[in-house]
Image (cartoon, rainbow, N blue to C red; front, top):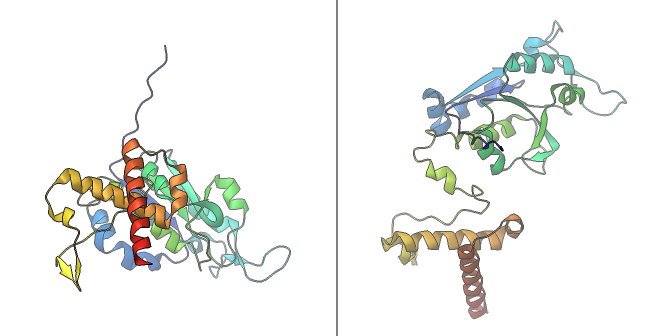
Length: 265
């Protein structure tokens, strides 16, 4: 008899372990706003491990010249490994990530799934020309990138991941639906949002949003979300299986958009 697959529950808290040469660069970020409140509420925890504290060098040196020559320096393997292994400890529910331009692009789908898989995420931030390639192999770490551009180090990507993943932990946001409705949460861009005043420079808030009809508002928001995605990130639609309602709303948006564009010509 086939066993019923157990549905994974969303975890109630997450512990991020950051291996970085510059832990102080996180101070203002994790101490403020939503992330700071989540730490105070014990929804998330962020710990730091500086490779300089694990080096054998008397002077705290952690970089070396690259084999084969070339410009720049490379973060040595041993100090990074010791720092990462201290973070990992004996934990079983842990994932190790190295930020690398050649890695898998970080997406919201990972953030959503992470809170159902692991309670601990170790984030290794590179510097200089990168980290000795053997670190990734020894730790069996996942390579991850936040985009096709070069940064000074892995600290900003680490903050990005911490922020994005934390939003899916229940209780971190005032309203969990906010995370579910954000851009990319369902594979689509978010719809436009409005607040007071009703009229600004002759531009009015769409009347449907003031109607109080929740069914019409939901359809309008979904239609705008689909339309925005079609206009700005059409490649996202290629991987989505749209419902009949979504296909109808997208067709309406495209027709209206083309009619409006034609009338302006």
